[in-house]
Image 1 (cartoon, rainbow, N blue to C red):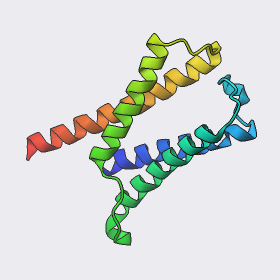
Image 2 (image 1 turned 180 degrees about the horizontal axis):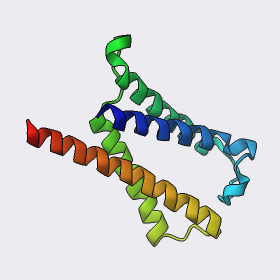
Image 3 (image 1 turned 90 degrees about the vertical axis):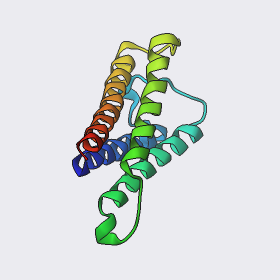
Image 4 (image 1 turned 180 degrees about the vertical axis):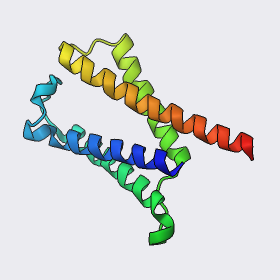
Length: 129
C-alpha cells in the first residue's frame, strides 16, 4: 500500500510542477492549447502538487506525527480526474494536435491505472482480513 502512495505522490508532484510551468511557456512542445490567462491552470497545478504533498505526509505520518491524504482519498481523486479527462478525450472536441492528444492519453492511462491498482489493492487487502 505504501508503494502505491509513493507512486501516486510522485505522479501528482510531477504533474503539478508541469502544470505550474505552463505560464512560463516551458511546455509548448506538448501542443496543449494556449489560453488567455494561466490563472486557472496555475491554481490547478498548485492543487495537484498539494495533493502530492498530502500523499507524502500520509506516507511519513508515523515519522512526522502528522496525517495527510490516505489511500481512499487518492483513489477518489485519481478515478474522478482520470474519468473527466477520459470523457474529454472520447466525447468532446478539444481542438488540439496529435502530440497533445498523445500526451493527454498517456496521462489518462497513468492516472486511471494508478487509481484502479490502488482500488484493487484496497479491496484485495480487505478480502484477506
